[in-house]
Amino acid sequence: MKNNENISFLPFHAINEFMRDDYREKVNELVFNSYLSLDDNIQRSINNHMNKVVKIPGFRNSSKAPHHVKRNYFIKAFEKSPGFVATILNAWAGVHEDLQLRVYSFLLQRGWDILPLDADRTKLPGFITVWPDTDDFEQLYNSFSQENQDFNANSDDVSLMIVWISGRLPFSTTDNKNIVT
Image (cartoon, rainbow, N blue to C red; front, side, top):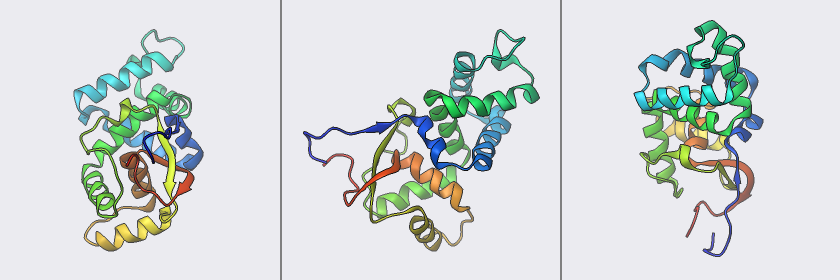
């Protein structure tokens, strides 16, 4: 993109339009079940978002509700709150640290201009709407799998990690992989 062009973003919860219901539940369940092993800052962020966007009847503080009660509210918040989605995807990526490192390296090798791996993607306003027309999820997964034959990851996880690491959703396409040139 040229410096005088605007970058369009979709809010983080727009990812729900690209995810199957069962996979959305799987992602949320993994984060939910991994909660105690997450970094303290990520746990705090999840709790803050839970308290802001999740109202569980009978609990002033939603994060204090029992596990089995919070589960469904957790997924509903993911469908509606951009900040909650960003926090959950950040936690999910942290749980899949090896996949995160491999996808980051893979995208750099393909010439994608992406933020450094340690950048806080939760601070972005959402996903960039431009996707390179030379790459689709199936092609990316096949290339990733071929380059990482020693690593077992399903196409859903690889695709979601590509979206999270690149900060892009395939809303519109271009032959330019760069965010800003």
